[in-house]
Amino acid sequence: MDRNKLAELAIEAKKLSYSPYSNFKVGAALLTKDGKVYKGANIENAAYGSSMCAERTALYSAMVNGDKEFEAIAIAGDAEVYTPPCGSCRQVMLELGGKELEVILVAPTMETKTFKLSELIPFSFDDGYLKK
Ligand code: ZN
Image (tube, rainbow, N blue to C red):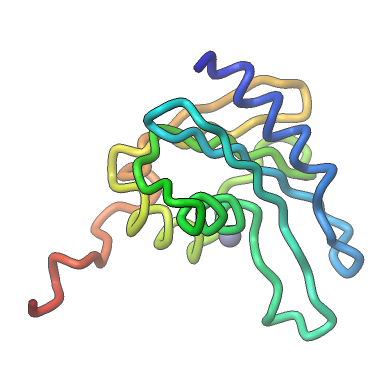
């Protein structure tokens, strides 16, 4: 899928945000290896710790719908330029998407900045460290 289209879907997903506390909307569009797209948005809660980020709502939605192979995720937030994923999302993306996952940050101007996930979470803890 064209990455500009994925970026547009991330911006569109921002509208699904439920963020009455931070007033900071984030949208994500997750592309599976077979071309499906799952949208995600941040969903907040009065008990702040129960809130969830856009990246993880997209990933979890894909997982419970049986999709486990991901190619790219586009992220659009309310920051002036790019909204990078938080540490928890980087860890979850590593677990579910792998080091090669393409992470596309989308600015409000539609400019994009693309990373390999391994660049965003170097020297990471993963299942390789666990005894099996
Ligand atoms: Zn996050």
